[in-house]
Every structure is written in structure tokens, then in C-alpha cells.
Image (cartoon, rainbow, N blue to C red; front, side):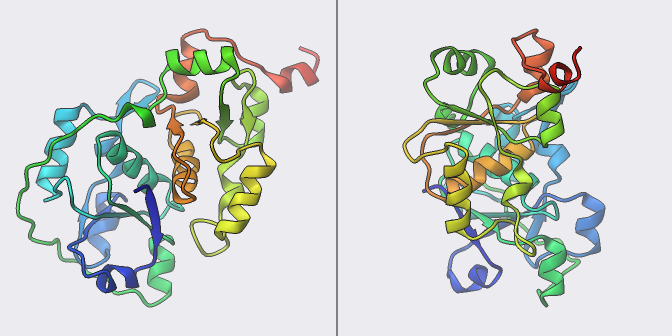
Length: 262
């Protein structure tokens, strides 16, 4: 089913029992959140292993979702105040563990408030559910799988980092598409037709298998979400990102150093 971009009016108009998840810091949540939203800070569902940012273990994720009252068939809407970057990481994690009905708020929480959105300071009373994580590895890229893609040139690898970071070091053959290129002035994403044009200009054609990465798999989650919103089915996220690639002494290209003659 992919990821759908929606505004706050959809929550009531859909008629669905939507589980809303706020992935901002707990202190920000307590100062005000969308009514009915539960708190799940990004630092809780993203597992840090040194410099690496990985998905939680299946049992850990089952516990998190069960505690929030999320069932396997629950519609889940996520939001943040980081242009959807952290919320996108949660939605990718949900897809990784087999969840289907996923939604992303189309704007930052702060803009939602500016636009007159309702705010609550009350945490909802949620009945604990039973959630089962069902790994779907087609959304995940690993060091091994991405090495095969690069060697065979069988898909497109997109570096979502800033241009200077890309020039300082990137995977051989990767295309740089900084995630900020896709941000609208007051929305998390540009209109779909403009997004399609940007991806096309960077060689991302429908049917192409695309792997998105960045330093730690966070901003690349944004590119992953954009592609899923557009309906792309062959999309993977390298969640451990360039941090793992560099640490494991894999081949890299450092164009900035070459330009400087070092």
C-alpha cells in the first residue's frame, strides 16, 4: 500500500481508528501534540550502535507497538518537526516489519499549529495490543546487498546527504540527491509532479531498483518516503548508512580531496 501523505483533516474524515505517533522529543510532546497522539521519540525506536543507526530487534519493536496500542492492521500516522525525516524513519521501520497502512503528516508540527491545528497536552489512554513483527527484507539494504548492486550496476544508489558531504566521500557510482531538494516552503514535500521531475533528473525512473543512503540512514529515510509516496515499489534503505560503509573499509570516492589535489 505504500506511504500516503495526508493533512490533519484526514484523521477525522477517514473514519478509521488511526494510531497517531509523535516522534519528537518527549519534552516537546508534553508541551503540546496532536490530540490522540502517542509519544515515541526517535531515540527510542532507532537503535544506536556506536555511530550506526539501526532498526530495533523484532521483539523490541513488537513491544513498542504493543505498548502504543498498534495492531498489525492499524492505520498509523506519524509526524515530527523535522520535515518528516524522523517520521519517515518510523514508517520505514514499520514497512520493514510488515506494516501496510501508513501515513505521513504533510507538514511540520509547528506549521500545523500555525495553521490552526488543535493541540492537546493529554496523553491518550491506550489499550495494549498484540503486535507481531513480520520481517519484509525487500525494503532493507545491507552492506552485502549494496556491494552487489554497485558491482553489477543493477540498480541506482542515491546519496541523500548534502553536496559537500557527498564530495568528501561517497560510494562509487552513487548519485547525489540532497534530501532538502525535495522540501516545499511550508510542506514536508514538494508537489508530486515536481518530485517526479527531480527524481527523473537524477536518473530515478519507475521500475528501477533504488537504494537510498546517507551517513546514518536518517535523511535517506526522507528520500525513501518520497519514493514510496510516489508509488515506487523497488525501494530500499541502507539504514546503517555511510557510517558502516566507511568503518568497514569499503571502496569510497572522495571528489573534494581529488579537486584539492590531495
